[in-house]
Image (cartoon, rainbow, N blue to C red):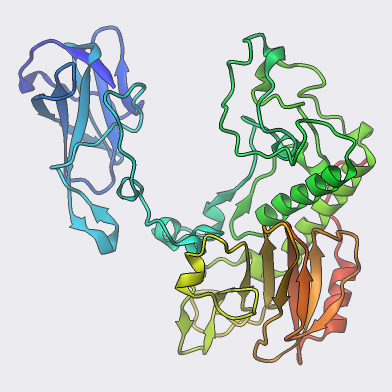
Length: 429
């Protein structure tokens, strides 16, 4: 970020304030504030206009609520600055402080020079998709935080809504009056062959299935799910990903005029929420570790390849791998008390490949059959039971969920549970 500063001695720095974060010009000087819970010292570094020569280092004098801050009364909007942060270098504890490295202000409004991106710039190690899918102990399992501290979402008030994520490749913000310049162009969306509405029923069916896939992965993942209002019935903004100025049908939500696909999607959403509530293992208060517990003779989560076996490191690195399963063992420890749980074991399987993949349902201790409780390819199908070891044809680009029956928890009891699942209170027609 560019902040001009008149030549000044370090003694001219004042206490400043811990808020707002970043470099804030108040008309007289600039307040610098940066968060670090574990730093022992933070130095503000001033550079020449090219960012090549460091001119001065000024230690931020105050530390309030884990925010380091200082105020330079002679600073002006313009010249280049960065930070050198001192603290422990303990990688195993997540600390990599190194004052020899210049750090950017995460709240900077402008950067000088060219960034060279690489894995070392990220706060987590790349190449561990098993830890990045639905729970990440590296980031969240600390300081007494629980899984509900994480928020899982696909869409929010900014950007495409769910329907438009699967219907548009590009933003269409012409109605906003800014020549389509506003709104982000990196939407991570796919129109599935046609931009916007289409009569091609193959595309329509695939889009609907993709909506169900995204809703299922959001709602059934460990953590707190967040849904954008209207996504549950397929509301569209016609490709507008920045509809702040549209006080009309583009942004209005009308639950009374839902189409048949919209009503079906709403009922599917109800079913997902009910499943999440019915199976406690989907709402556990402990982060799964993915390690074997010798004392309890159980592994809380196992990632499976389509052959029903645990995925290898090589399979995780295979760029062509498009199908896998997540086995959540209901016998795993539920709380801080070291004893086996008694929840129903759940298998969730994902296939992003365009064609059918044969999925072998794993043989789990005490398990007898797998009851299919959700299938995004057949959302209205009644729960069907399959023996362990059965080869299930997993439709391309679909998601399925199974519940394990055991000698103490029969298929009949699981069917009864699914039959008695009551929908949550969502707006009716």
